[in-house]
Amino acid sequence: MNPEVLEYLRTQRVCVVAVEMPDGSPHAATVHFAHSEGPITFIVQTSPKYRKSEAFLNKQSVRTSLVIGLEEVAGGKEKTFQLDGEARLIASTEDLIQTYMNKFPEKERKFSDDIFFAVVPKWWRFTDWSRPEGKTVFNSDGTILVKGKSA
Image (cartoon, rainbow, N blue to C red; front, side, top):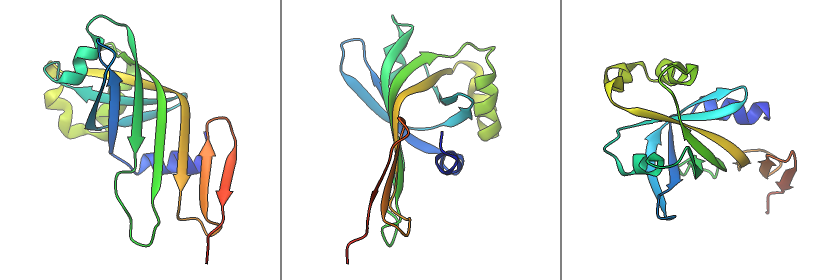
Protein backbone atom coordinates (compact mmCIF):
# COMPACT_ATOMS: atom_id res chain seq x y z
CA MET A 1 0.00 0.00 0.00
CA ASN A 2 1.16 3.52 -0.76
CA PRO A 3 3.17 5.03 2.16
CA GLU A 4 1.08 8.22 2.01
CA VAL A 5 -2.08 6.17 2.52
CA LEU A 6 -0.57 4.29 5.46
CA GLU A 7 0.53 7.55 7.08
CA TYR A 8 -3.02 8.89 6.79
CA LEU A 9 -4.49 5.73 8.34
CA ARG A 10 -2.11 6.04 11.31
CA THR A 11 -3.60 9.47 12.11
CA GLN A 12 -7.22 8.30 12.16
CA ARG A 13 -9.30 6.66 14.92
CA VAL A 14 -12.90 6.62 13.65
CA CYS A 15 -14.58 5.05 10.63
CA VAL A 16 -17.98 3.98 9.39
CA VAL A 17 -18.18 0.25 8.83
CA ALA A 18 -21.06 -1.47 7.07
CA VAL A 19 -21.61 -5.22 7.34
CA GLU A 20 -23.93 -7.51 5.43
CA MET A 21 -26.70 -8.68 7.77
CA PRO A 22 -28.17 -12.21 7.66
CA ASP A 23 -31.06 -11.01 5.46
CA GLY A 24 -28.60 -9.46 2.98
CA SER A 25 -29.25 -5.86 4.01
CA PRO A 26 -26.38 -3.55 5.03
CA HIS A 27 -25.96 -2.21 8.55
CA ALA A 28 -23.60 0.75 9.08
CA ALA A 29 -22.14 2.09 12.32
CA THR A 30 -19.54 4.61 13.38
CA VAL A 31 -16.76 2.86 15.32
CA HIS A 32 -13.18 3.15 16.49
CA PHE A 33 -10.71 1.12 14.44
CA ALA A 34 -7.11 0.04 14.49
CA HIS A 35 -5.16 -1.47 11.63
CA SER A 36 -2.30 -3.80 10.92
CA GLU A 37 -0.08 -2.99 7.93
CA GLY A 38 1.23 -6.33 6.81
CA PRO A 39 -1.07 -7.27 5.20
CA ILE A 40 -3.45 -4.33 5.64
CA THR A 41 -6.22 -5.39 8.01
CA PHE A 42 -8.65 -3.24 9.98
CA ILE A 43 -9.78 -4.25 13.47
CA VAL A 44 -13.10 -3.30 15.08
CA GLN A 45 -14.35 -4.01 18.60
CA THR A 46 -18.06 -4.24 19.40
CA SER A 47 -20.50 -5.61 21.93
CA PRO A 48 -22.29 -8.85 21.08
CA LYS A 49 -25.47 -6.93 22.01
CA TYR A 50 -25.04 -4.45 19.13
CA ARG A 51 -26.76 -5.03 15.82
CA LYS A 52 -23.57 -5.33 13.75
CA SER A 53 -22.56 -8.45 15.69
CA GLU A 54 -25.66 -10.24 14.31
CA ALA A 55 -23.90 -10.36 10.94
CA PHE A 56 -21.57 -13.05 12.33
CA LEU A 57 -24.22 -15.33 13.89
CA ASN A 58 -24.25 -17.92 11.11
CA LYS A 59 -21.36 -16.94 8.85
CA GLN A 60 -17.59 -17.16 9.11
CA SER A 61 -17.22 -13.98 7.04
CA VAL A 62 -19.47 -11.26 5.67
CA ARG A 63 -19.17 -8.62 2.98
CA THR A 64 -18.25 -5.24 4.35
CA SER A 65 -17.44 -1.66 3.43
CA LEU A 66 -15.49 0.86 5.46
CA VAL A 67 -15.02 4.64 5.15
CA ILE A 68 -12.44 6.80 6.94
CA GLY A 69 -12.39 10.59 6.66
CA LEU A 70 -15.63 11.92 8.06
CA GLU A 71 -14.80 15.60 8.47
CA GLU A 72 -14.93 18.47 6.06
CA VAL A 73 -11.66 20.38 6.32
CA ALA A 74 -11.36 24.14 5.79
CA GLY A 75 -9.94 25.06 2.42
CA GLY A 76 -10.90 21.79 0.75
CA LYS A 77 -8.04 19.78 2.22
CA GLU A 78 -10.05 16.59 2.86
CA LYS A 79 -8.64 13.10 2.66
CA THR A 80 -10.81 9.98 2.58
CA PHE A 81 -10.24 6.25 2.46
CA GLN A 82 -12.87 3.73 1.43
CA LEU A 83 -12.81 -0.01 0.96
CA ASP A 84 -14.92 -3.02 0.10
CA GLY A 85 -13.90 -6.38 1.48
CA GLU A 86 -14.63 -9.22 3.86
CA ALA A 87 -15.00 -9.18 7.64
CA ARG A 88 -14.43 -12.14 9.94
CA LEU A 89 -14.49 -12.68 13.68
CA ILE A 90 -11.11 -12.58 15.39
CA ALA A 91 -10.20 -15.36 17.84
CA SER A 92 -9.30 -14.10 21.32
CA THR A 93 -5.75 -15.43 20.88
CA GLU A 94 -4.95 -13.48 17.69
CA ASP A 95 -2.33 -10.71 17.70
CA LEU A 96 -4.81 -8.39 15.95
CA ILE A 97 -6.60 -7.85 19.28
CA GLN A 98 -3.34 -6.60 20.80
CA THR A 99 -2.91 -4.26 17.83
CA TYR A 100 -6.32 -2.78 18.68
CA MET A 101 -5.52 -2.52 22.41
CA ASN A 102 -2.22 -0.78 21.66
CA LYS A 103 -4.16 1.97 19.91
CA PHE A 104 -6.96 2.11 22.52
CA PRO A 105 -5.47 1.03 25.87
CA GLU A 106 -8.39 2.62 27.73
CA LYS A 107 -10.68 -0.06 26.24
CA GLU A 108 -8.84 -2.97 27.88
CA ARG A 109 -11.45 -3.10 30.67
CA LYS A 110 -14.27 -3.49 28.10
CA PHE A 111 -12.71 -6.58 26.55
CA SER A 112 -14.47 -9.12 28.80
CA ASP A 113 -17.46 -9.95 26.57
CA ASP A 114 -16.83 -7.84 23.48
CA ILE A 115 -16.07 -9.35 20.11
CA PHE A 116 -13.53 -8.21 17.53
CA PHE A 117 -13.69 -8.53 13.80
CA ALA A 118 -11.09 -8.06 11.08
CA VAL A 119 -11.82 -6.31 7.81
CA VAL A 120 -9.62 -7.30 4.88
CA PRO A 121 -9.94 -5.11 1.78
CA LYS A 122 -10.53 -6.55 -1.67
CA TRP A 123 -10.67 -3.03 -3.17
CA TRP A 124 -9.72 0.36 -1.74
CA ARG A 125 -9.43 4.00 -2.79
CA PHE A 126 -7.70 6.93 -1.08
CA THR A 127 -8.62 10.45 -2.20
CA ASP A 128 -6.50 13.46 -1.25
CA TRP A 129 -7.82 16.93 -2.09
CA SER A 130 -4.92 18.69 -0.32
CA ARG A 131 -2.17 18.08 -2.89
CA PRO A 132 -0.79 21.07 -4.85
CA GLU A 133 -1.42 19.30 -8.17
CA GLY A 134 -5.10 18.84 -7.32
CA LYS A 135 -7.37 16.02 -6.27
CA THR A 136 -5.36 12.81 -6.33
CA VAL A 137 -6.89 9.34 -6.15
CA PHE A 138 -4.80 6.29 -5.25
CA ASN A 139 -6.45 2.94 -6.07
CA SER A 140 -5.79 -0.58 -4.85
CA ASP A 141 -4.92 -1.66 -8.39
CA GLY A 142 -1.95 0.72 -8.32
CA THR A 143 -3.44 3.40 -10.55
CA ILE A 144 -3.24 7.07 -9.59
CA LEU A 145 -5.64 9.65 -10.99
CA VAL A 146 -4.89 13.38 -10.72
CA LYS A 147 -7.52 15.99 -11.46
CA GLY A 148 -5.87 19.42 -11.65
CA LYS A 149 -7.20 22.38 -9.76
CA SER A 150 -9.51 24.70 -11.64
CA ALA A 151 -9.07 28.48 -11.52
